[in-house]
Length: 461
Length: 105
Image 1 (tube, rainbow over the protein chains, first blue to last red):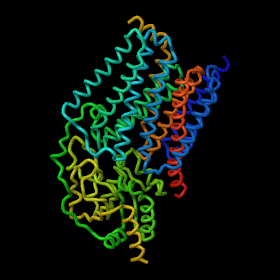
Image 2 (tube, one colour; image 1 turned 90 degrees about the vertical axis):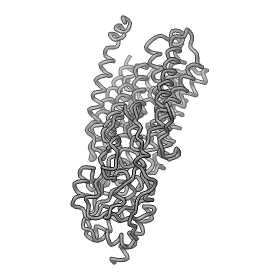
Image 3 (cartoon, each protein chain N blue to C red; image 1 turned 90 degrees about the horizontal axis):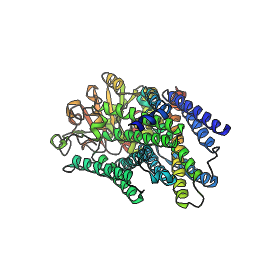
């Protein structure tokens, strides 16, 4: 009795701490405390669970936790910040597969459930298996996309939506069949899981470009929902509350992002319109003025106000430290340097900001979209590093994609450093590339930035 | 239908908890500046680690002869602890960058 109430009190405290943690997290000054608070609340909730009388097999539990923690520590230390989006989707996949496992085990542990399946609990469990598998397979597809193991193209085939709907109906009927069959049938359960898994990957395969950002947040939200369902079944308050926080956080983020590309989550998932991108795109960028390192160096060093627009290219080439070095050198010469980061830049919300901050670039210098567009009007040079779609002038972006872009054309000069003048991730042609103000530097961002730094030092010292 | 209402009455506090928490959850995550998105995502992923508690409870209840349950739930325990530990450490690593840039100022 006392033990039980101690556990419940700690769970209650942990839930309150989670709320405070989220509150603190929104303020950059207190965010680290917020994260510590949440970790503390989590640890307290985990360790107090050992007090439960039902918990036996301590050696198994502790060795499992130790193995997992060691892997977690290694992952977090070795991880390069560029790969944060991948690891986030990986974690989400883990959450999904663990919830599916737990739903299976619930069926196994409760013989009563197996005799009489027509009730709320088994219905909820099947829902958990269904959504957990979708979240797992969807996250795998997202990871493949981020690593570009799947070709950077929307995978579409005729009757796609009809086939998906058909598959969904099959999954649904298998589920209903499991519930109303007089005996529990493990083969049916496994085929139900496999079909949900397939449905998850088929639903996510056609999604490309910036929509993947929305998708990955939405998958977090689904995993959170499954955890909530599990918490309801296991009658465990901390799981319910934690799950709901994860779900609402994912939902809020994905709807904010979907809103910023003028779409809704549901239209991305289920009613994807044919975008007919072929019509707008041409195979290669048009004429461009290529420049050389020394001209670019002189241009950079003689512009009083430079705004660096960083995109995904900065991340793949790992050029953020070189970027900071360039900033220091330019500032010594009295150049004002600021950064513009589009909310959709990179492969995860906030991806590029984190990289710039890793290179110790000041928080105050990183402008969001609105501020960047205001500052660009007075800027002498817009220096684009590894970005394409986010700087595309608005008229080139089809209405369906219609997200606001960074208006580099309002700056006096434009210098673009990209791997190639080819089409961006979305496959759109970029008229900023062929503008008369635009000068091009082609090559790997880190390499070229280093050369630029050397050149500026050589000329002006 | 009667069964449904019976369920509702029996679990009404649970229903309250779920619905009110949804509003709290949306409220606390809505006003986050776009610069903080990455740590927010990573913090919410580490919070997914609450499944570890469920896994511990299930592994704890497993019969000692029941090898399948033991093995499967141990896998669940270790995978979800990867989530908890990795998630919080990575969030902390990200947040350190914000701190550094503040001190420099």
